[in-house]
Image 1 (cartoon, one colour):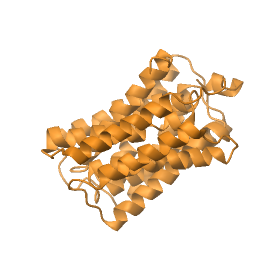
Image 2 (spheres, one colour):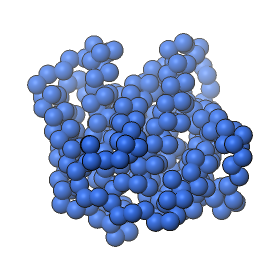
Image 3 (cartoon, helix red, strand yellow):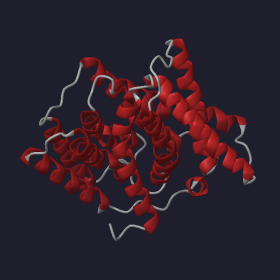
Image 4 (cartoon, one colour):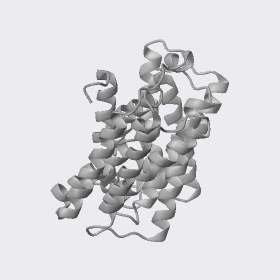
Length: 299
């Protein structure tokens, strides 16, 4: 970790801690919000806040092509990735959801490899050992899932990873934070349309815990952590950028123990040690070549 630039280290810790806690926040918010409406309003508000702040600073609007590409990425990342995650958490515990997402780095690295940037041996070791630790964690405790939850999680992972690769390899997004704002806005619009087509509504009163969880998802989960993740994608190797998937289960399980009264035994502790070891391997893997001019501009 000390070998990493401070900004990269801060972005990693942000994604590790914040996204690790958002699974529990989604669980709390789902008590009052239906899944697509929860995510749709989350990204609409976050995107509007970021867009408005950028306009006050004089940042120019995205071009029509950049809006189009932001729509594709927003639908994949926010619509498919986060929307299906919220659907899955109606059937799957927050801890198991975080553990299952741990296969994301493997899929992301394979997607990137299709463009000629395959992981090296150390990265593959980190990916496989982290996945093994996640499986060990999933095999212990009171983890249960229904098939529809697993299908939704698989869809979420594929949508998230494909959107992540396209955002950096094929599509032309607006530079810097305006690209993030346009993605969240259009992803929020898409999720809101899906919610309307499904007939979702606020059938239950919005409790204070649910509202606070929703606000946390807007500010920390969307504005802060998502920006940090997009920065990592354009700065470090994909295996390291996606290593949050190995730390998130630790945070999710810890919150379950502290807030939900779950038990943590020797098997869970061993799994956490394996997961942290895999993150260390990814962190110490080869340095990524200097970003292209386009990526430098995006950062």
